[in-house]
Length: 576
Image 1 (tube, helix red, strand yellow):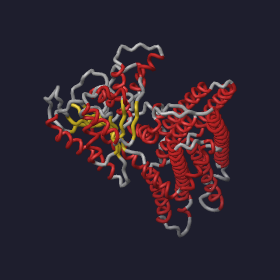
Image 2: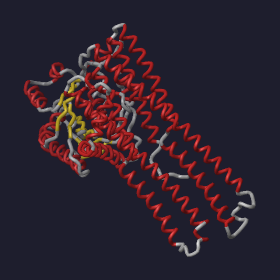
Image 3: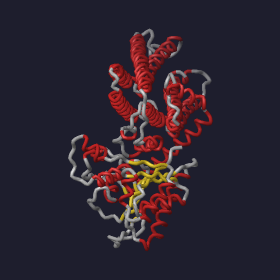
Image 4: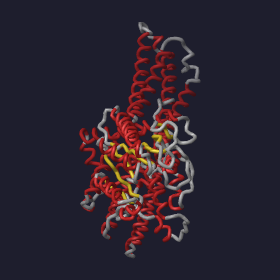
C-alpha cells in the first residue's frame, strides 16, 4: 500500500509551557488528514516524515506514534555525526528512543565531500548544507507539509522558514549541489500551525491552523483542492492495487514474466523482490486501463458514426417510408446519444485515460529502479521522475517515493555477471521492445492514412456520380431513382464520417507522435547497448554503471514527455 506522506518541519525551541496546546493542534491536524483519507472508503496507511531534531520535530513524531501513524526518520547526516548536535544526554536518549520506533530510517550522505571531490568551493558550514538538503528532501517528498512555525520569514538556510519557502516555491540561495533540484521543486500545499518560540514568543493567533500555498496560485482554497486531489489519486491507486491483486492475479504474473525474459538473474533480496512485485502490479494496471481507454474510444467512435447514419436515415429515408411513425427514429437517435453520454461519463469517472498514463509512468520508473538496484547503482528514480511537475501531477513522484524510499542512498555490490544480466535483459529487451512497437505503429499510421485516403476518394467519387442527373436524388421524387440517389448520398456521407473517425481515433491515441518516440528510444537503447558491450570487454564496470544511470535518466525523461503529450489529449466525445 502506498502511504500518505506528511512531512514535518518546526522550531527547535517551542514554548515548553504550551507543549500541550501544540500537541493538541498537531493531533487535530493529523486526525483531519486521516479523516480526509478515510472518506475515500479505502484502507489508509499514513507516514510522518521527520528529521527528529529537538523540539517540534520530536513532538510531532510522538503525537503521530500515539495515533498509530508510522514514522519515517530522515537524518540530515550519518547518525553518529547528527548526534553531536544534541544538547545533552537526555536529548540524545530521546532521539534514540524515537529512532528505534521508526519504521524506516534514511541517512543523507555528506554533501561537503562530494563538493570537494568536484572541486567546488562553498563558503558555508557543511552542517548547514546538510540541514538545507534535509529540508528540501522532506518538502519534496510529502503529500502535505506540516509546519510548526511562527510565520516569521528569516534567511537562515535550512531553517523552518526556509523549508516553508521551498514548499511554497519561493526562491532562496541554495547550495550548488542542490540548486537545480530546488529550482525544479514539486511545490505544493502545506499547513502551518502558528507556533510561538522562546526566541519569538509574541505571535498572532497562537496554535491556529493556516494554509501554506505556492505564490501565484489562485487561492488557498484552490491549493487545498489540489492537495486533496493528490491524496485522492493515491488512495485510488491503493484501491486499484488491491482490486488487481484479488481479481486479476494472472495479469500480475504475466507482467512479472515480461519484466525480464530470464528471472533467474534477479537477486534474492527481499527489498528488490518487493520492488519487482510493485512493478508487476503497476504494469498490469497500466495495461488494464489502457484496454479500457482504447475500447471506450473505439466504442464512442462507432456510436457517433451510428448516430450520424441514423440521423441521415431520419432526414432522408424514414419520412418516405409508409407507416413509419416519426417517434421511432427520434427514440433511436436519443438512445444512441444516451449511450455515448453514458460511456463517456463512465470513462471520465473511472479516469481511464489518466490512470493508464499515470500507472504506466510509475511502472516504467520502477523498471528503471530495479535495473539500477541489480546493477549496484545507488541512484533513486525519485530524483529524476517528472521532477518539474507541480500541482496534481506531483502525486506520481510522491507515490513513487512511497514505493522506493527503502533504496535511497543504499546500493548493493553487483558482480560483473549482474551487469551483463541488466545489459541483456533490460537494455537489449527495451531496445527490442521499442523496435517492435516502432514497426507496429509505423504500419498502423500508414494503414490509417491509406484507409482514410481511400474512403475520402470513394466519398468524392460518389459525390461526382450524384452530379449526374439520372442518379441525383433530386431527379425524381419517387420510384427507384429516388432511392438509389438517396442511398448513394447516404453512402458518401457515411464514408466521409468513417474517414474522419479513423483519423480522429489515430489522433486521440497519438499514433504518429508515439512512432517518433519509439524510434528515438530504440536508437537510445541501441547506442547504450553497443557502449556497454565495449565497456564490458574492457572490464570497466564502473563506467558501465555510469552508462546505466544516464540511460535510466533518459528513459525517465522520455516517459515524462510521453505523459505530458497524452495529458494534452484528454478523453473527449469524438467530433466528426
